[in-house]
Image (tube, rainbow, N blue to C red):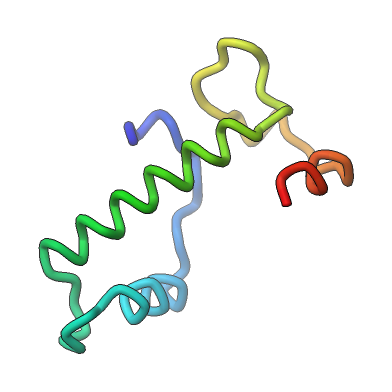
Length: 81
């Protein structure tokens, strides 16, 4: 997942705490190497899934431009779910 693939304001602190608590298998409050690997792999997979269903993206477009996007339309949302 290259930096240019995703444009985001990032995750909130609470979201980061939640992600860590879900993946922290040893209860240390931190992610070890294997736990971080699992997180990174899942994030890459979620990005691939999102991009494969992003019907607003123009053909050949590599990354999203939030300025060109509006809300998700109902048919697109139904298809994603």
